[in-house]
Image: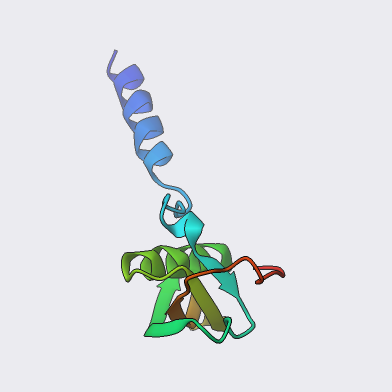
Length: 103
């Protein structure tokens, strides 16, 4: 019985560990290497550190959303001392219909 309990608890703990999830608001943030449209207003510069590059991009989008941004210009995405580091500038844009390209 104790072994089953330990296995179940281990599975639950491991299930809680995983990649960083993109929030609903973070999904609304475009992450691009190009400058935003001219009418966008810069809000803040962002810097995040995560375990891998995908998580760093996700974290950047989530952080931007918390600041009221819907567009991030990705300035850097690299590994530094064992961590994935991302930095960029968050913008608030009224219309993003003309912005296209890979994120």
